[in-house]
Length: 348
Image (cartoon, rainbow, N blue to C red; front, side):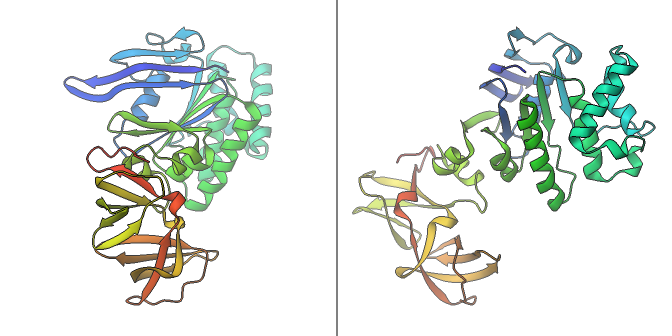
């Protein structure tokens, strides 16, 4: 196990700048998730940690070594890819032990490590099968097994669940997190799926346009996003963001007046944020016209129009209103977020 430090890490292709000075310190044994929209640079950053991409500036350290010039094989890392990258002509056991064989390990050592990893991942009955005889989830376990037999200092995962169906992704999320808890190896995990990030990470690094927007524990990012981008990216459904101004101690925007938390006294243009689950049904609340009602069992998701703004509410109650009908809602004041209209930064 080892800490990983990224110090002013940059990446450019000619005059095109991909990463703009990334600074992240990952502690020994931590599970860090890099998350952001497609094209934000998260996979490029992971490949730079792995040594599969050269860096244009800054330093990457694994443990006490700066690894900028080291080959991937010398960095003591193991990477799990999106496409599994298994050898089709090799059995599960041979795929898992190939890196050890390549390093010159004895047959006894390879067998011991492969059997140990197979036991952890539930692959023991499958060791003599070939990749074509496996399901997607089983192939992903083999790819993970191939990584852990090496006993690396750092695991790197590059969107490993994106090829799986929704139900299997949930299962594999739990397996990867459980594997980390059992082995305690420093892990850097890339995904565009913020639900994966929220459920798996010790800390999340939110990236956008080659920059870090915010770093923090999942619930810290959910409860106190530093800017409009993080507020809209973390959480599903996304936070409702309404543009307007503060007038007379209230927020006014898009034809609606909303209360703001006490003790907050910004003036002028702002963006008002409220998460769907922080809205409640209230007979004396603000009128909203129902557009779509989606029963989800324990809760109901309602898309509605409030003034000139389409918003989403998630209610614990069963909502019987039909499209076109009016309901009344109220925001939870302690959960209201206010952002600077021009810069998008949090102001309360």
